[in-house]
Amino acid sequence: MRCRVCRSRAAIEVRRHNAAFCGEHFVEHIHRQVQRTIEDFEMFNSDDRLLLGVSGGKDSLALWEILTELGYRVDGVNLELGIGAYSVDSTNYSRVFADQRDLTLLEVDLQDEFGFDIPAAAASSSRTACSACGLSKRYVLNSVARRGGYNVLVMGHNLDDEAATLFSNVASWNIDYLARQHPVLVETDAGLARKVKPLIRVAERETAAYAVIRGIDYEIDECPMANGNTINRIKEQLNAMEQQRPGFKQRFLFGFLERGSPIFNEGPRPVLTACSVCGSPTTGDVCAFCKLQDRAAKPTGEGQ
Ligand code: SF4
Ligand SMILES: [Zn+2]
Ligand SMILES: [Zn+2]
Image (tube, rainbow, N blue to C red; front, side):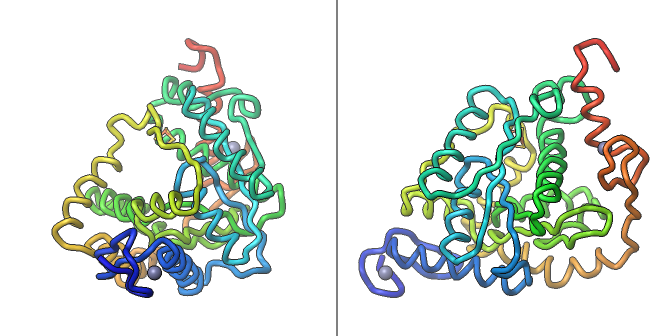
C-alpha cells in the first residue's frame, strides 16, 4: 500500500476515500478535511474567540492540535467529572498537552463548583450517568464560554459519534433531537454560545492515528461509567456496516445533513426563558441542570 501523494509506504488506509497516506500526508489530509468542514458550514474564522471542550481523550486533543496548526486561537476547558482515576487521568492528559504547547486550559471541578459529581448525579436522579454527564457538560461549558467572552464553543465529536447519535435519534424518531442535530448550532440572545463540531468528517480511528503520528498522549482507558452505553453499541453495528460498505457512515450522516436536516428544522424554535434559579436559558421555569444539582448535591436520602 502506497501513499496517494508521495508513493512512499503508507501508514494508514482510508477506505471510504479509496486512499492511503504516509504519516506526513495523512496529517495534511486531516487538516484539509477539518478546514473544509469549518468553511462548508461557516463555523468560525480566525477573528472568533474559540473555547474547546477538552476531555483528555484523542478527539479533543487531536482537534486542539489541528485547529492550532490551522492558525486558530483556541483555549481549552476541562470539566473534572469526579469519575475516580479516569477523571484524574483525563485532567492530567489535558494539562500536559496544554503545558507542552503553551496553550490556555481552563478547569472546572464539578464537585467544587456545584457540589456533586457524575456518580452522585446518576445515583440520585432517574438519568443514566451519560445523560447526567452530557447535561452537565453542555451547561458548564456554555457558562464558561459566556463568562469568558468566547463566542464559539467547539466540541470534539467525530464522524462515528455523530453517525451513531443520528442512528439512535432516527431509531426512536426523536424529532426534537433530529431538529437540533447539526454541526453548527447558532448562538441565541437568551445566552447560548454558538456550538460547532469541526471533526465530523474525521472517523474515530483517524483521530487516534492522527494523535499517534503527532505524538499526542491521551486517555486510552474507557470511562468506567460507559458500561452498556447505547451509543457505543450502535457504533459497533455501524462499524460492521462500514466494513462491508466503505463510506456508509459518511453517506448516512452527510446525506441527513444535506437532505434530512432542513425538513426537521422547519418547525418553530422552542422559546427560551431565563431559569428562575441560575438565569441560564431554559424552556421551563427551572433548567434541567439546576434540577439535577438540587437532587445530586444533597446527601443520600434527601430530595428523593
Ligand atoms: S462515558 Fe458517559 S459518563 Fe463517561 S465521560 Fe462519557 S458521557 Fe460521561
Ligand atoms: Zn506521502
Ligand atoms: Zn438553572
